[in-house]
Length: 397
Image (tube, rainbow, N blue to C red):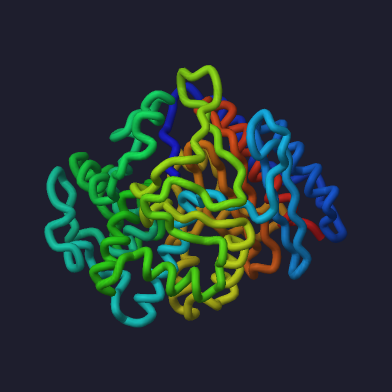
């Protein structure tokens, strides 16, 4: 869910892995994807990531293969169920961005509208100025707004998590806390081809409020009607205060800093994540959403082109995702075989979600890994393995 903070302790390791990630794949597999291959890749990733479970969905045209590895519940040997629900975390941003851009297409909103125009007085103080921040800035993470991590309210240890897992924290509370900080930099100037960039959930919390002001309805209702129901995403929901995942699902586990073992993070209130990361979904639904999006079935050509117009991410994100560029709620990363993969990442305590699609949406990979750690070196190792896996499947001949 949250963007990783720069850590001096992993500078050398991240540099080495960044170089490795920029090295093209040794070879490209040919022929149709087989269940045995997908199971093998899932099992290899399980070992490399030192996680509890892995689920992998690979599609080439209409040919789809799914496979898992590891345990749905730690210590039971039970496999990850097909059609498992999971918290999509920041993949939510792509869905919310598409909703905003539909409103732009309807001329109810403009990418150049300021936050002050729609939310008068909301972004002020400590150098923050909503009259200089546009909807485009919020969508593209070029606003400079401080990225306030929810753990700054709830704590970062296993004990803190247990104490606060059912707390109702609103996105508005997090925005208020974020605005106590000065911005990281001034908002990007119009037409700047390489604006300063920082990943900030704060901007998407504000976008949720903008959607509500424009439409007079909760942002979640607009997302449901415009995207979820329209595309038939039957496994997708916005849970509000409900702390439980729908069945079937695999359990999620997180090894917090200073903890000797995993904490089960499956049951928790994610209301606070709101339009920045509250969505619950399935691999099939995320594939269907991004495929429809890239095919032009969600947005008109002009708005889709705007969404796919990218700027470079910052050095911190380049360490984890080399070559990454960011559009309007949409990530782009180069493939070793040429071209790019599109999608969005999602991270939360316990789970990685990774999506990758070719530009035409013909091929896709949706990957979920349960069992995270706070160890930076292991995080980088896992990230490299996930990105290499996606690259291999998207680059098949």
